[in-house]
Length: 202
Ligand code: GTP
Ligand code: MN
Ligand code: MN
Ligand code: MN
Ligand code: MN
Ligand code: MN
Image 1 (cartoon, protein in one colour):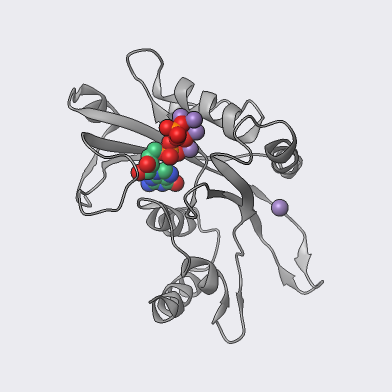
Image 2 (cartoon, protein in one colour):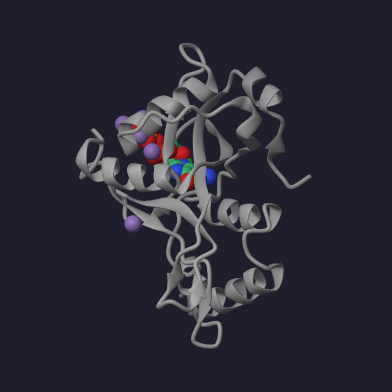
């Protein structure tokens, strides 16, 4: 098991931790880029107020709400749409390594990650609501972005460029792991994108 990883129950039993829940919302799509490259899936991330890319979600207080209730509350604030996320959508919980740059200082932070597949129409509704009705638009959240799930320019463009951006916490790892686990992109392409992105950073 990767370092810092624990079960949902183990994490909740720890009284010395604060908790944050984030979710990768995605759908299938038949749309194509320039009528050629299949877009395969729509995966939603967001540009945060701090200039970093991350998943929608946020701090949850297990004293007053379940992890999933808290996550749904955050989604309403940040996306303007009520999306119920359940225990079944939980993927992993892990303590953020102290070395990770994080905007929440002080006590230990457990990051709970969820993945939920929804309809393409629902994704589009989220994208509209995130701009029009979400309370946090323009403040905590500067905009929703779709992950480019393809390689361009001999592998240097598309997902490679996207992965070379700066991400909050371990959101980059969460994204890459989900791509592999759910087989949303061929493993060979995921690895090519990672290799290119490392060359582009710094
Ligand atoms: P406030 O309402 O301003 O407190 O923000 P929030 O509740 O929406 O919290 P936020 O989404 O910023 O998440 C809280 C903490 O979780 C952040 O400070 C990061 O350390 C971490 N975090 C945020 N987004 C992600 C993400 O996509 N993945 C991971 N792994 N961690 C994240
Ligand atoms: Mn929030
Ligand atoms: Mn948030
Ligand atoms: Mn919050
Ligand atoms: Mn907030
Ligand atoms: Mn969009």
